[in-house]
Length: 386
Image (tube, rainbow, N blue to C red):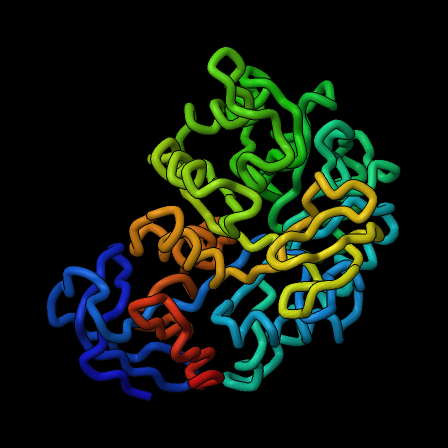
């Protein structure tokens, strides 16, 4: 495969003009003929996108705990330019979560056993992002409060062992759990600790970050608001450096102005666009389920059927988030691209293999036009959408 005279997003965060060659599923040669100064009026290439927080798509959910469900989700993601994914689990009974994690580990192992190109039509399963069960009743959102439990290392290690290395993020609400600092210190060597579905105040959040928590789940959503006398988790995250900050940019969960504010506030942190998509992504309006909760989907909005004021994930994919971030929130293209490629790859620990167009890395590319519409997707050196 060769792409001649193409504008591409480089690993330095700038757009370059050059040539890209791939062989046996890897970038073999990437030439740089100078900065392009922008995306221009024609087509341009970005690395394959990486979604580190989604629940499902195409009628399936990671919590279905079947190989077929993960395959259908992975196929939907790949054709929409997402070449690697880390699905998120819901708050469920621990034995059920163990089954879900073991199933995900089996799927990952099956993918790793494939020869180059054989898995091209599926996004790589790069990890699991656990939103529960160690979260807050007050900020549970669409999570099932019946299964929320207090943090303890024995249960956490039991879940991690079930996933055989597949768990990358474990969410907690520190304010609900005395001794959370000791828990974070003990677990952070095995998994990233994220603050998720939490009503934590500024001081408690800061304590959690200083103890080793390094990830924030869907900023602004399922957390206390940022107020001038009570800045909460958002203010604490802005006060720290080196954190990974998820944000949903579908035009429903977070106002475009708040998205811009987040990118400006978190300059020393790593902004990561996520889809948080549920099984209805890619399907028509109707009633679906998320973690056992009935959800009504109308257009781009998914809300609990029992309480329409509570959002229940999104029905947009990561490509939609990229377009909304640029076209509605006014995020510079390069910053938005970084938030769907390099930053999630580094957060997942897979940047040596994915997240940028560099020689030796997996040949995953998305071709976009000036309107950021997809014009081609290459996965593992194979064109799966042209």
